[in-house]
Image (cartoon, rainbow, N blue to C red):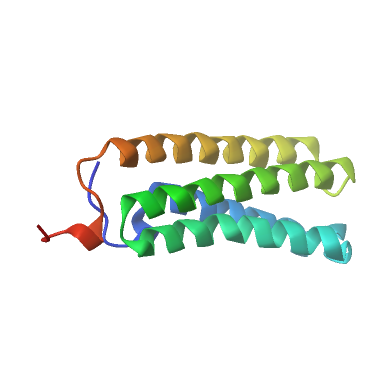
Length: 132
């Protein structure tokens, strides 16, 4: 795997950003905009997926990054549960639900693979570079 200097270059971050944008589009174009509690919950949890990747990356060490990727997976699962409620309350169609839900499953799969990669990596993280 290539070395990344910015969290924005990570594929998993790009996927989470798209998911967050998809959720926002639902918020502003459906009746979800008036379901204040659920709107705030899913807006927060989908944003947290992005935020935890960024924060973990910024820590500079694989162990901390893995910990934050675990938080990311939790936030992504929270987003998936809230997406189910949005569907159950008829804010979105079944086809849109399936599309976004499927992408969230991909995010979880990619997170798991990335965590394994970091665990097995000989490189401990950027904060340990050039240090003996």
